[in-house]
Image (cartoon, rainbow over all chains, first blue to last red; front, side):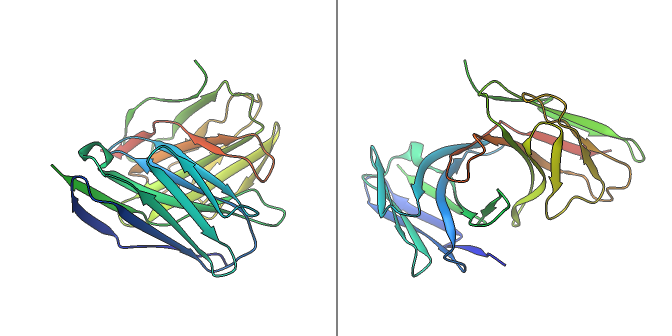
Length: 113
Length: 113
Protein backbone atom coordinates (compact mmCIF):
# COMPACT_ATOMS: atom_id res chain seq x y z
CA UNK A 1 0.00 0.00 0.00
CA UNK A 2 1.37 3.38 -1.05
CA UNK A 3 2.25 5.74 1.78
CA UNK A 4 3.30 9.36 1.29
CA UNK A 5 5.21 11.25 3.97
CA UNK A 6 6.11 14.92 4.18
CA UNK A 7 8.80 16.20 6.49
CA UNK A 8 8.89 18.58 8.24
CA UNK A 9 5.27 19.03 9.29
CA UNK A 10 5.90 22.72 9.86
CA UNK A 11 8.61 25.16 8.84
CA UNK A 12 9.22 28.82 9.64
CA UNK A 13 11.79 30.86 7.69
CA UNK A 14 12.66 34.54 7.31
CA UNK A 15 11.69 36.30 4.12
CA UNK A 16 14.21 35.93 1.28
CA UNK A 17 15.49 32.53 2.28
CA UNK A 18 15.62 29.62 -0.16
CA UNK A 19 13.94 26.50 1.19
CA UNK A 20 13.27 22.86 0.39
CA UNK A 21 10.19 20.82 1.22
CA UNK A 22 10.44 17.04 1.18
CA UNK A 23 8.06 14.31 0.05
CA UNK A 24 8.74 10.59 0.17
CA UNK A 25 6.68 7.64 -1.04
CA UNK A 26 7.01 3.92 -0.43
CA UNK A 27 6.03 2.45 -3.82
CA UNK A 28 8.03 3.70 -6.80
CA UNK A 29 5.45 2.43 -9.32
CA UNK A 30 3.85 5.82 -9.93
CA UNK A 31 2.56 7.64 -12.99
CA UNK A 32 3.27 11.10 -11.67
CA UNK A 33 3.66 13.30 -8.61
CA UNK A 34 1.89 16.59 -8.08
CA UNK A 35 2.63 19.46 -5.67
CA UNK A 36 -0.24 21.59 -4.35
CA UNK A 37 -0.61 24.68 -2.23
CA UNK A 38 -3.49 25.13 0.23
CA UNK A 39 -4.36 28.39 1.96
CA UNK A 40 -6.39 28.21 5.21
CA UNK A 41 -10.00 27.24 4.57
CA UNK A 42 -9.45 27.02 0.81
CA UNK A 43 -9.15 24.34 -1.83
CA UNK A 44 -5.92 23.05 -3.35
CA UNK A 45 -4.05 24.94 -6.04
CA UNK A 46 -1.89 22.85 -8.36
CA UNK A 47 1.71 24.06 -8.47
CA UNK A 48 3.67 21.49 -10.45
CA UNK A 49 3.10 18.09 -12.02
CA UNK A 50 6.07 15.78 -12.64
CA UNK A 51 5.61 12.72 -14.81
CA UNK A 52 7.39 9.52 -13.76
CA UNK A 53 9.78 9.87 -16.71
CA UNK A 54 10.82 13.40 -15.72
CA UNK A 55 13.48 14.50 -13.22
CA UNK A 56 12.24 18.02 -12.55
CA UNK A 57 9.77 20.76 -13.37
CA UNK A 58 10.04 24.50 -12.89
CA UNK A 59 7.50 27.28 -12.56
CA UNK A 60 8.76 30.72 -11.63
CA UNK A 61 10.46 30.53 -8.22
CA UNK A 62 9.40 26.91 -7.77
CA UNK A 63 11.37 23.86 -8.79
CA UNK A 64 10.25 20.31 -8.11
CA UNK A 65 12.47 17.27 -8.51
CA UNK A 66 11.62 13.59 -8.63
CA UNK A 67 13.81 10.59 -7.88
CA UNK A 68 11.43 7.72 -8.47
CA UNK A 69 13.89 4.96 -7.66
CA UNK A 70 14.50 6.31 -4.17
CA UNK A 71 10.88 7.38 -3.66
CA UNK A 72 11.63 11.05 -3.09
CA UNK A 73 10.57 14.45 -4.37
CA UNK A 74 11.59 17.92 -3.28
CA UNK A 75 9.96 21.30 -3.81
CA UNK A 76 12.48 24.12 -3.88
CA UNK A 77 11.20 27.66 -3.28
CA UNK A 78 13.63 30.43 -4.13
CA UNK A 79 13.67 33.82 -2.42
CA UNK A 80 10.69 33.09 -0.21
CA UNK A 81 8.04 35.76 0.40
CA UNK A 82 5.35 36.15 3.08
CA UNK A 83 2.78 35.37 0.39
CA UNK A 84 4.28 31.89 0.10
CA UNK A 85 2.93 31.08 3.57
CA UNK A 86 0.55 28.14 3.16
CA UNK A 87 0.36 24.36 3.50
CA UNK A 88 2.16 22.47 0.75
CA UNK A 89 0.92 19.01 -0.17
CA UNK A 90 2.39 16.38 -2.43
CA UNK A 91 0.39 13.58 -4.02
CA UNK A 92 1.30 10.56 -6.13
CA UNK A 93 -0.78 8.77 -8.72
CA UNK A 94 -0.09 5.06 -8.53
CA UNK A 95 0.41 2.82 -11.51
CA UNK A 96 -2.33 0.25 -11.85
CA UNK A 97 -5.96 0.00 -12.78
CA UNK A 98 -7.21 2.64 -10.39
CA UNK A 99 -6.89 6.35 -10.98
CA UNK A 100 -6.30 7.68 -7.48
CA UNK A 101 -4.18 10.42 -5.97
CA UNK A 102 -2.59 9.55 -2.64
CA UNK A 103 -1.67 12.51 -0.47
CA UNK A 104 0.90 13.30 2.17
CA UNK A 105 -0.18 15.21 5.28
CA UNK A 106 1.51 18.41 4.15
CA UNK A 107 4.09 20.92 5.35
CA UNK A 108 2.83 24.14 6.92
CA UNK A 109 5.15 26.94 5.79
CA UNK A 110 5.37 30.33 7.48
CA UNK A 111 7.56 33.00 5.88
CA UNK A 112 8.28 35.77 8.36
CA UNK A 113 8.56 39.35 7.02
CA UNK B 1 -14.01 30.87 -16.76
CA UNK B 2 -13.13 27.18 -16.49
CA UNK B 3 -12.96 25.43 -13.19
CA UNK B 4 -14.58 23.38 -10.47
CA UNK B 5 -17.42 24.84 -8.44
CA UNK B 6 -18.40 23.42 -5.07
CA UNK B 7 -21.48 24.55 -3.22
CA UNK B 8 -22.36 25.49 -0.64
CA UNK B 9 -19.18 26.82 0.97
CA UNK B 10 -20.56 26.12 4.46
CA UNK B 11 -23.18 23.53 5.38
CA UNK B 12 -24.76 22.66 8.69
CA UNK B 13 -26.40 19.31 9.29
CA UNK B 14 -28.59 18.15 12.10
CA UNK B 15 -28.15 14.70 13.55
CA UNK B 16 -29.92 12.09 11.42
CA UNK B 17 -30.18 14.22 8.30
CA UNK B 18 -28.86 13.48 4.85
CA UNK B 19 -27.17 16.36 3.05
CA UNK B 20 -25.88 16.69 -0.51
CA UNK B 21 -22.75 18.56 -1.54
CA UNK B 22 -22.60 19.84 -5.09
CA UNK B 23 -19.59 19.64 -7.42
CA UNK B 24 -19.74 20.94 -10.99
CA UNK B 25 -16.89 21.23 -13.50
CA UNK B 26 -16.72 22.82 -16.94
CA UNK B 27 -13.27 21.52 -17.82
CA UNK B 28 -14.63 18.61 -19.88
CA UNK B 29 -12.84 16.21 -17.53
CA UNK B 30 -13.79 12.55 -17.47
CA UNK B 31 -12.61 11.74 -13.94
CA UNK B 32 -13.98 13.27 -10.74
CA UNK B 33 -13.15 12.66 -7.09
CA UNK B 34 -14.35 13.42 -3.58
CA UNK B 35 -11.89 13.79 -0.72
CA UNK B 36 -12.37 14.44 2.95
CA UNK B 37 -9.84 16.52 4.90
CA UNK B 38 -9.49 16.37 8.67
CA UNK B 39 -6.83 18.17 10.71
CA UNK B 40 -3.62 16.16 10.90
CA UNK B 41 -4.89 13.36 8.64
CA UNK B 42 -4.39 14.70 5.15
CA UNK B 43 -6.83 14.06 2.34
CA UNK B 44 -8.66 10.75 2.21
CA UNK B 45 -10.50 9.49 -0.87
CA UNK B 46 -14.24 8.90 -0.47
CA UNK B 47 -15.42 8.07 -4.01
CA UNK B 48 -14.16 8.54 -7.53
CA UNK B 49 -15.62 8.28 -11.00
CA UNK B 50 -13.63 7.71 -14.15
CA UNK B 51 -16.56 8.02 -16.55
CA UNK B 52 -20.25 8.92 -16.60
CA UNK B 53 -22.55 6.37 -14.94
CA UNK B 54 -19.64 4.64 -13.21
CA UNK B 55 -18.01 5.22 -9.84
CA UNK B 56 -15.86 3.34 -7.32
CA UNK B 57 -15.47 3.43 -3.57
CA UNK B 58 -12.39 5.03 -2.18
CA UNK B 59 -10.80 4.38 1.19
CA UNK B 60 -13.57 5.78 3.40
CA UNK B 61 -16.84 5.32 1.46
CA UNK B 62 -19.01 4.12 4.36
CA UNK B 63 -21.83 6.57 5.10
CA UNK B 64 -21.50 8.36 1.76
CA UNK B 65 -23.12 7.97 -1.65
CA UNK B 66 -22.54 9.53 -5.06
CA UNK B 67 -24.01 9.64 -8.54
CA UNK B 68 -22.51 10.49 -11.92
CA UNK B 69 -25.41 11.03 -14.30
CA UNK B 70 -23.70 13.86 -16.18
CA UNK B 71 -20.07 14.40 -17.07
CA UNK B 72 -20.07 17.84 -15.43
CA UNK B 73 -21.58 16.85 -12.11
CA UNK B 74 -20.58 14.56 -9.23
CA UNK B 75 -22.74 15.22 -6.15
CA UNK B 76 -21.86 13.67 -2.79
CA UNK B 77 -24.53 12.74 -0.26
CA UNK B 78 -23.51 12.46 3.37
CA UNK B 79 -26.01 10.10 4.93
CA UNK B 80 -27.09 9.69 8.53
CA UNK B 81 -24.98 6.52 8.60
CA UNK B 82 -21.81 8.65 8.56
CA UNK B 83 -21.11 8.96 12.28
CA UNK B 84 -18.52 11.72 12.17
CA UNK B 85 -19.32 13.89 9.14
CA UNK B 86 -17.86 17.17 10.37
CA UNK B 87 -14.98 17.85 7.97
CA UNK B 88 -13.80 19.82 4.96
CA UNK B 89 -14.88 18.18 1.69
CA UNK B 90 -12.95 18.68 -1.52
CA UNK B 91 -13.97 17.80 -5.05
CA UNK B 92 -11.41 17.32 -7.83
CA UNK B 93 -11.31 16.43 -11.49
CA UNK B 94 -8.80 15.35 -14.10
CA UNK B 95 -8.79 14.43 -17.78
CA UNK B 96 -8.98 10.78 -16.80
CA UNK B 97 -5.78 9.54 -18.34
CA UNK B 98 -3.47 8.35 -15.60
CA UNK B 99 -0.72 10.89 -16.29
CA UNK B 100 -2.86 14.03 -16.14
CA UNK B 101 -3.04 16.88 -13.69
CA UNK B 102 -5.78 17.06 -11.04
CA UNK B 103 -7.62 20.27 -10.20
CA UNK B 104 -9.59 21.05 -7.06
CA UNK B 105 -12.60 23.09 -6.06
CA UNK B 106 -12.69 25.49 -3.12
CA UNK B 107 -14.25 23.03 -0.73
CA UNK B 108 -17.35 22.71 1.45
CA UNK B 109 -17.08 22.80 5.22
CA UNK B 110 -19.73 20.56 6.77
CA UNK B 111 -20.58 20.89 10.44
CA UNK B 112 -22.98 18.76 12.45
CA UNK B 113 -25.09 20.81 14.86
